[in-house]
Image 1 (cartoon, helix red, strand yellow):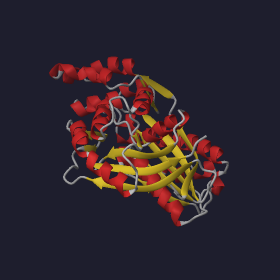
Image 2 (tube, rainbow, N blue to C red):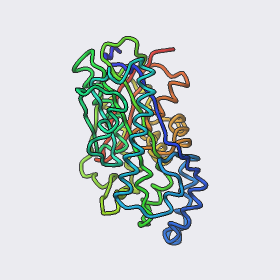
Image 3 (cartoon, rainbow, N blue to C red):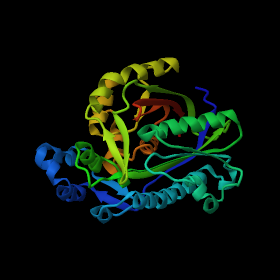
Length: 350
């Protein structure tokens, strides 16, 4: 298809501290001992999550002590700044441009608060122009990667010739709460990691091998309690409904089919999905009538990086392209709202 906006360069990045799942599970026995006593099967979440390793902006020992909102925010600012630079420098190098060539920056993050926003904090270090347009986006959660790319694509399309940089950063580990012991907190401690991705977009750039098409979101009414944050003096608290996998299995198909139909895509079009978790991936396969195991790249990324929220879908896309994927696909993610977001792409061969 003749999609006018293309990706000129992209990159992913993770922080320096690996979290081995077996070590995390052992440590959590002491933290969530009471929860495991009440729900003996809950400890198996560390095995059933399908994760071997994740990465964090802080070493595992940092989580042994309680941290308040101020300490978490400082860790967020330091970690987000570093990942922004790391991912963006690689993406710009692959696009063969400098930071001064960037006209618009879209920064997506829902795991911390930064005012001034992250791109402003690192602007001088990166070498962005003083007149660069800055668009920070907060609150999209796991759907932020796909939605952020769609926002960036629309901005690039609105002003052909301008360069749009989309940077997606999530530091999910900093929301770890040892002061709470709900099932959602245990699941979060077994599932989430930190990561970032940066994408350079232009309209009319024929060199780009990945072209960006239309996007669509679907918000289900009455689902605000499915996923999100609560906020208290300590920090964010994860909101994660146990009904999520079943909801996805029974409700995702209809909006997905409508999107395929509206864009003239057939049922065999590949879906490249945000891997929310092992159970959610199984639910997505069931909803889209895919054979069990079809979302192999998603499971591999989940195994090696965990659920990094919004940037994770870019890790899946990167893996798919490295494996030789070409042709039409739909990037898809689910996030707070509760929302499904879809974005059509076309990858050239070679």
